[in-house]
Length: 109
Image (tube, rainbow, N blue to C red):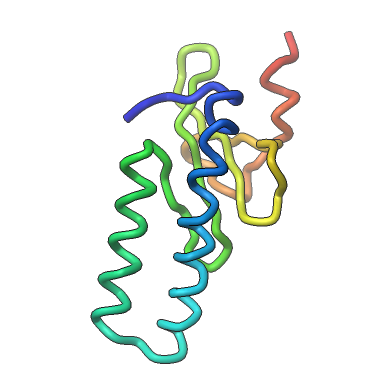
């Protein structure tokens, strides 16, 4: 899986966002009327996002993680639908959304 710098992750956000919006829309439809064809469509969309190197973490929130590296260890750059065109958060691999920290920390000494 690729590792992203912030600018690389932000560069592909415009490609990822339509998939996330579609996933979000289909997930709401699935919650109202669960069917296997709709589930298959959602899985296909998630696969398309994964093929870009991005991990979908929450279908309901449009939450995604971009694998990245900080001081030789893997971290995630974290973004969700509605957060704009910039990635403002990161977290350790084992802390998840609850452990999100401001991305400015990555650039401090």
